[in-house]
Amino acid sequence: MNDVIQTPYYLIDKSLLLRNMERIARVREASGAKALLALKCFATWSAFDFMRDYMDGTTSSSLNEVRLGHERFGKETHAYSVAYADYEIDEVVSHADKIIFNSISQLERYADNAAGIVRGLRLNPQVSSSSFDLADPARPFSRLGEWDLSKVEAVMDRISGFMIHNNCENSDFSLFDRMLGQIEERFAPLLRKAEWVSLGGGIHFTGDDYPIDQFAERLKRFAGEYGVQVYLEPGEASITKSTTLEVTVLDTLFNGKNLAIVDSSIEAHMLDLLIYRESAKVAPNAGPHRYMICGKSCLAGDIFGEFHFEHELKVGDRISFQDAAGYTMVKKNWFNGVKMPSIAIRELDGSIRTVREFDYADYEQSLS
Ligand SMILES: Cc1ncc(COP(=O)(O)O)c(C=O)c1O
Ligand SMILES: NCCCCNCC[C@H](N)C(=O)O
Image (cartoon, rainbow, N blue to C red; front, side, top):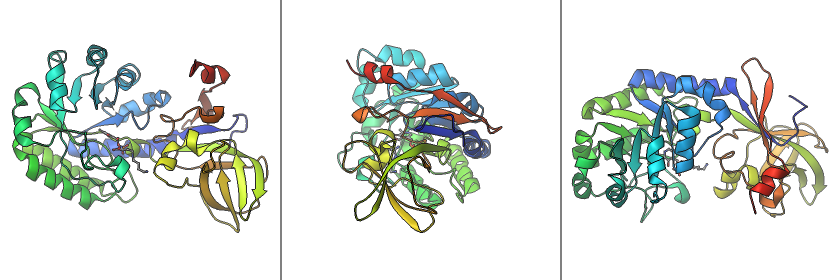
């Protein structure tokens, strides 16, 4: 480990990223589907030069993301947002090849602004793989996409394709397959009129044991059946298991349990875990000494989780939280003014370079 970098820092390992990139490239090749990086999940642009060769471009959720995708990644740039504002639509269009509206009313409002690029609409199939209410696009009263076939048919003259995002961390190919079947049953008349369909993200197809060939075959069959270009929007699947959050123990206590406080904060640096009530991961998580690893913010529940270690923890010990790329760097914040983790990249030759450090000026400038 490189001791010259001050913790906390996110460490992106290109050799681990490469594993995901190669799987994505294999699916693209075998299925004909295009793969766009979902910037909402991972937007650390220092890694884009490396990822670009394996992916077709980016997809976005806002003006800032579409601009970043266009300027830093290039290739194909999809724009999507739950709702665009009048003051941003022209700039969004200037950065995008394709724009996907979330609702028919947004399409009608901005169809003319977007007349020069490809336009599409988000469909909501009202079925999802999410076990989290918070991340379930098909939750009751969902605002995410249109579902009424006749209303969508009426605007087909203004669009040429659809985006359907209803998977969430779905590592079960048969569930993906079944839900795609339900989408086909429900939306076949629309799919037949489309030129392209994005199946969104949330499909864990770069995970170990995922039946990549069956997946690719299913995508190819779908594309052939409806005569469409299929897109995937992998966020988590692009960067899964590629990155750690490196932290240092600052203090230890015993309060009925062994506690160790580290120079980071789950609230500030791995917020998704807190939101979804999940534990961080430490590897190998084995040994006789069990500790609750706590963040240094004032939040009582700023706890990364409980883990096993081979030896007693002491001040200065290093801990690596695993799988720290997705929805971490894009969500990090200045809560408590806790030092924001630097970002470092381990190159394929093993050398590590710091690509970003944050200091007091960044904290100060985030406020006024
Ligand atoms: C429209 C859309 N595409 C892609 C993604 C990326 O999902 P994941 O990171 O789970 O692959 C999301 C997640 O919010 C999304 O809403
Ligand atoms: N680990 C708990 C669930 C995470 C949900 N993933 C991110 C959001 C997702 N892409 C979505 O909202 O659809």
